Image (cartoon, rainbow over all chains, first blue to last red; front, side):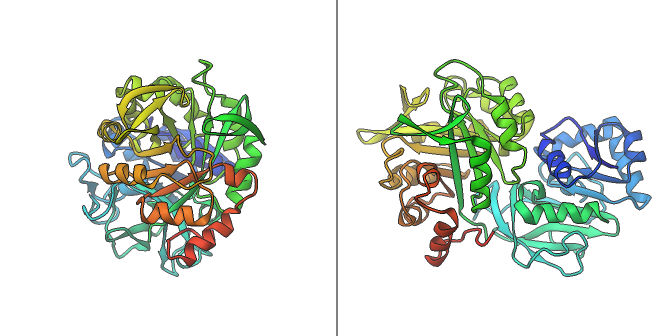
Length: 196
Length: 253
């Protein structure tokens, strides 16, 4: 059972639909106990970093970190991946999980923001959930803040600068792009996650 | 490198895809779910579904058509037409849209942009602007091109951006359905005036039109309907021509 975290912001439909399409057994939940009982957790996110405030208020942040510490696979998507870092300039008073180092920042003024559309990824071969994804495959992005390149970066994308398109360490995975909206490449990535 | 997007647009009337010329003389072009899937397979980067008679006939968006179209579509999916308030947008998102496009309702009440963006994020809010040349400038029309507003398109694009829009879908009414090329003057003026992506629409007829609107019009994306529906231009072939001309596109997909 894969739990998709619903924290009241944004729209989880597309993520749910993609896992349904792959035949995965899923539950959309805002209940920390359901998270604890799930085999895997997907933490999607769209919108503003401040919408993550509710994670602390509901005990969800604690439940996510607790689940992650037990070795359960956790996939953060978009804002969900940004939360895995220390924080974001978008809302300095809310702390991220700090699993990956550094803060999410705005794009340089040389490029339009938000970064919207299909961009290519440079993939590190060792990446587990990016297995089978060809070098320079296109994935769909829509975001105004980006995570820095870190030792755990498994896919990098160029937009005014190089940033982390995907990260992983052990059982923790993050993708800044939207695999649920990235055609066949995206579905392959979600399938890899289902098969971990 | 960020690619230029090719967006296939489905204009829907009564649950069927239709296409007209200069917003009139509608012809049947098929079932929305089937059309959307076929366009995605042939290389469309996004699908836009516009319920073009929802506003003029004063009814809500056809949610069943949205649901069936979204069901097995795994590229971004935008829905517009008949969205007048936050609840309407929520219902369309719930039916499977990734973004909503608002036009008449945003002109009437620009705070609607911020209300929807506040709940679903700016990336989910596309402000659609239908504009027609008027003297030295471009005038905004609403209600499917039926009603002139007296407003300047560039000023309105700026205001919509400030209100929290994530993208501008800019349609030249003068070029709509004519296949005589995009209105690069209009697109360039708006793209230069706002910080968010601009999708050019109206007038696509051939690959050189797309090359021109990306180069001269500085569009971030280009949308077309007529040429894709009636098989005049295969999206894959179009993208391959764009790539050969040095325009970055997602091809092969």
